[in-house]
Length: 310
Image (cartoon, rainbow, N blue to C red; front, top):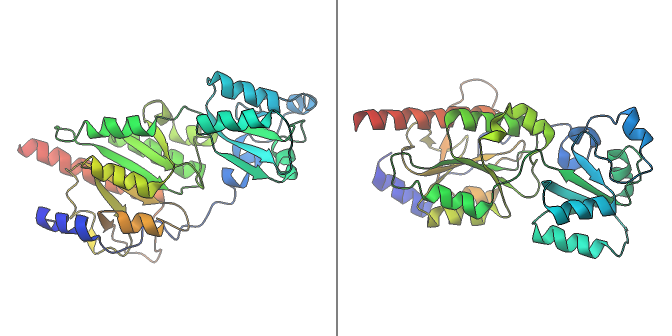
């Protein structure tokens, strides 16, 4: 695609929809607050300690008001999100909620039975914290780091995931991002899997090298990219622009949709351009991690060719 056409796309947008939008949803996701999505079955030692709040199950759960409060105060243990039992009343919850708000830790409400299932019947006191496998990068700092690459010989290449709920998919994408040498990943704060132990295992060490930031609003994140002169490219099975026609040598943030729903409507509408990967079989979508690999390695191909010719 020629640059004047790209500018026209940037101004007026393109066709809508995304790759992977009709993928089947995973049977179990962390957002469904299923214990095994985080920890696996509790061991007999964990069950024997069920009368004491604060036991950590496989390094992924922390429960009880005081242990969760201390974790928030110390700030040493990354907290993914906190689940409160519906109807829980404790005078210390106000401080807990204030600390969670300051640390931008999402707080959810769930039936008490869900928390009992998560902790295998332990004395959770109506509070369960889900611990991250790695610390998140600050969104603003990652955006600024990407912006510093604009105009250099290695322009920024970032990946934004819109609602990926399967931890194995997220881990596979992170592994691909690291192998491709991309510069960072953004995920939503809500309605998406975070950096769980399952994600870390699927990423096969990539979490040690790939900065991952959480964004409260992906539509706003698109504007943040545009303000920093970074093109926003969404994926669509029905887009008229092939992924090979886009100029990936430019500063780019690649937006990929999650299982089932794909890119949300506002995200699709606000991307500068949507591109497609041709599908020649009977299945109508690619797994999000496969799509990420195809697109990122096309970016590598173009950038390598551009450096060799220059």
